[in-house]
Each structure stands twice: as structure tokens, then as C-alpha cells.
Image (cartoon, rainbow, N blue to C red; front, side, top):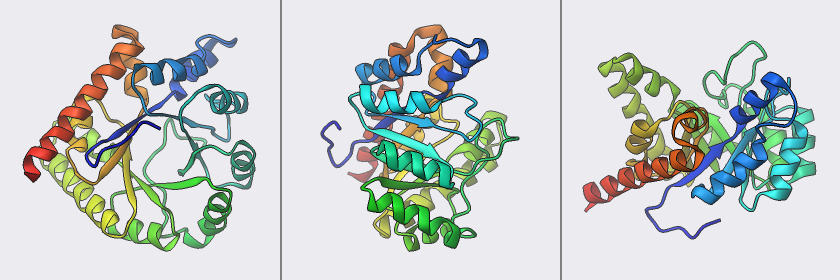
Amino acid sequence: MPAETAHSVRLGVNVDHVATVRNARGGKHPDPVRAAKAAIAAGADGITAHLREDRRHITDDDIRRIHAEVAAPLNFEMAATEEMVKIALAVRPHAACLVPEKRSERTTEGGLDAAGSREALAPAVARLADAGIRVSLFVEPEARQIEAAAKLRAPVVELHTGAWCDALSRGDAGAAEAGLAKLRAAATAAAKLGIEVHAGHGLDFTTAEAIAALPEIRELNIGHFLVGEALFSGFDAAIRTMRAAIARGRANAKVRAA
């Protein structure tokens, strides 16, 4: 992993929807592993991939190949099921991000209810941690979820930014302001508990710049938007533009803190 400064924000690129395009027709093209390598070459710090129960995009072979062929950390998104825990223990990715999953959803809808499912999640968190896999919980920016993550001894939370991004997209200034305030409060609360703070879902150049300005944020995981932008500008250019947006956000955080 690249060297960090006290003010750096890592970029994890999610390649799920490269696999979505491939699977729409079948065959091997476009290859999400090739996309992962291109992302790292363009300046990404790591790769995120979600192996869903129904294998709608990323496959088991994709996970194995990304881990074996890409010289960067793999953040393995997974439901906290016995099947997925066994796969994670076999692959041994750098990190495992536990997310909610429903077959009927188009994409992940909301954060994991760590507070309401703490007893059910505890065995999976412990087994992954015992194997040296860094566990992250994808949660809503709520105090009760942050507290539950601390009780589960998860070293990382990834804050769900989807509601905030949706409010901005709708032009609902009040909801967007409230959403950002919730994200700011959750990031502060997590950092005070010694939990590393990541964020993701629905981020684009503008929202990534804004969220990177929160001083507690250490990593952003972005996929769908970058894959869409790559259709127009190319994958390399999209990732470099995202890196620049994140850098501007972090620079703004440093100016406000000075």
C-alpha cells in the first residue's frame, strides 16, 4: 500500500460493474481483473469487489484472480454468511467489508444493521479477524451503529453516503445538509473510539471532494460512477480526475484546520 501522510485519503476502486457489463453478454470481456490493474496503474490504492450470493457480477474466479494478480490490497465486500466467510478465509484478502444483501435489490440498499445484529455478526467478525483479515462494517452514519461496531471490535467502519448523495442529486438542500451533518458526526464519533473511517456509495467527483474534506476520512470506495465515466473519458482519466478531486477536498480540510 502506498505510503500515507497524516492527511491522505486512499481511493479504493470497485470493479463490480465491469463484471456487470461482461456478464450481460457472457464470455471474458471486459475483464474486471484488467480493470483492477488499470485502476492501480492510474493511481488507485486498492481494489474493492463484492461477491454476491447470486454472483450477479463478480464471480469466485474474479476474486481469486484479483487477489493473485493485482499488486494492491483487495477489499472483499461480502454478506456475513457461512459461505462467504469460508471463501474469505480461503482467499485471505487484505480486508473484508461486511454489507447487507438482498437478492431483490438492484444495488446495496442502506447500511448493515450492526446494532440490531450484533450477536449474529460477532462470530463472523471474530473468525475473519483471527485470520488476519481487516474487518470493516458498512453502516449508516448513526451513533448506535458506530457504538455497535466498537463493541464488535471492528477496526473500520465504512459510512454509507448514499442518502446524502441522493439528496444532492434531487436538489434537496435541506436533506443534503442534514445528511452531511450526520456523516460528519458519525466520522467524529468513530475516530474518538479508535475506529478508522471509510466512506462510499453513490459518490461522484463533487461529493468525493466534499467528503474527503472531513478530517477523519481515511478511504473512499467508488465504483459505479467511475465505470460510467470511463465510457466517456477512459478508465485512467476517470480515476486520475477522482484522485484530483479527493486531493482538493483534503487540501480544503487542511486549510480549515490551520
